[in-house]
Each structure stands twice: as C-alpha cells, then as structure tokens.
Amino acid sequence: MRIEKNYCFFLIAISVILGISGCEKNNPKPTPKPIDPNEVPTVLIGTWKQTAFDGQMILTDDTKIFEFYTKPDTEGNYPGNGVVSEKSVGVNSEPIWQEILSKYTYRDSVITITGTTNNPFKTFVYTYRITELTDSKLDMTLSDKYINGNYYPDNTIGKNVVFEKVAANTSGKIAKMWKEKSKNGTMEQKFGLYFNLNTFDYYYYDDNEIPHIKNDHQGSYWFYDNFFVLRYFDDPDTGDQQYHVDCWDVELEERDNQRTMTLNASRGGGVREAYVFTHFDKP
Image (cartoon, rainbow, N blue to C red):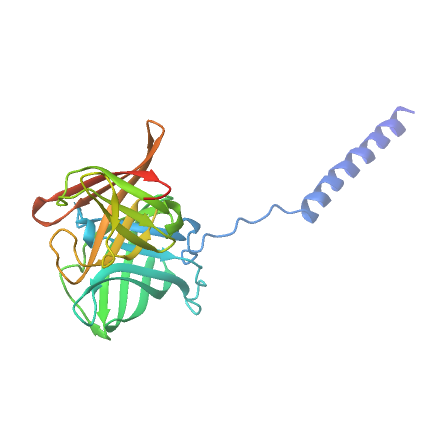
C-alpha cells in the first residue's frame, strides 16, 4: 500500500540521519593545538653571524658568532646548548678567538644566554628580545647584560643587533693551498696559505715564484661558510712578534675553471682590505 511505502521511506530517512549524527559524535573535529609562545622556533637552531649593530654595518673584527644547538624546554628547566664566539683579549693581553660553550633559555621571544670564559675568567648573561626571525635573519635588541654577576650598563644596552644564518665551523671546506692572485691590502710580498684541518702554514714567494714556508707564522683558523678567522704569531708585514687575530668576510667561487677565494674586511678608520686567492693542491 502507498501508506506502508511512505512509512518505510520515513524509517530509512530517520536511520540515515541518526547514523550521520552518531558518526559526527564519534569522530569530532580535532581541536587546533594552541601556539605556545615559549616554544623555540625551529629556524632559530643553527649558526648566526652578526652583520650590524645599532643600524650600522659592523667592522669585520667586531663580528660575533652565535650557535644554538639544542632546544631548551618551554619551562626553562633544561637550557639549550650553544656557543658564543668572538674576538677578545686574553690574560696576557694577546688577542684570541674564543668559542665559549653556553646555555640559553627562550621565553616569549626573549633569549637569555649564559656562559663562562676561562681566558680570562668571566661569567656573562646576555638577554635579547627578538624583533624579527626568519630562516635567514635574526633581529634582536639587547635588553640586559651582566658580567661576573654585576649589571653592566654599557652603550650596547637597548641597541639593535642583526645576524644572518651561516654554516657551522666547516674548516675542512677550504683545505689545501691558496695562492694570492691580487690584493688591495697591506702585504708587500706575494704569499700563500696552506690549510690543514684546523691549522694553516704561511708561504711567501720569491722573485722566481718559488714558495718558502715561514716557520714562525703558522696558526689556527675557523671557517663559517662566509666568514673566516685567522690567529697567528708574528706579522709577516711588520715583523711584530706577537699574536694576531684577523677576521674576514669570504666569498668562494669558480672563475675561468679555477677555484677562487676572496677575503674582504672593513677595518677601523675607513680602511678596507681585500685579497683574491686561487686554489692549488700543494705549494
């Protein structure tokens, strides 16, 4: 009968509606996880090279390297591991390049870095507020600085610092010999540098282009993708018998089927130095 058929269709429709409602109740839509302001952004992890201070490009020797290795927890109970590297003065008043093991915490876009140096002994606490962070740029303002437990209100407080992301210390990348090709610096004699894994030897070339090793001029080096640090004894240009630390911006490229390395540096008093080297396997 027509009434029975309509009744059957009614029962089927009710069953379908109830079934759909039951599925919705059994499979609720997932609730989005709230963003934790204390969660360390993944892009922060890595190595950062300072490029500017208070809106001005810095001198090359004033460059700092910040490395953030592991994430701290969001409660600040387990600080992350890192390294602060910079040119400074050691206990004997000689310049050194220090790689200082450090800890850091992150909370609501504020990074607090703590560390201890041994040459000379010094503890420090730096607090920065991040104003911009991308996969290639870190822009921060220094809000607090403590040295040996005492507040240190120097002219860096409240100033903006800018870092760019670089590779970690990859010294093996430039191993072997590099011979000077052209210059715009202070060296009078053509020279070459032979890089081992973490140390280097200095060669000078005579009028017949024969290389001679300078035995009192070996040193150490650090290489961060596009930034380069040399520490050596006895300046070959002045004969100054003491340690020196030179920082350089680096560009590696291929020119006319020849690997080249260009070193550039902005020194004090508006002085700029530049050297171009070509690559060889041996002197």
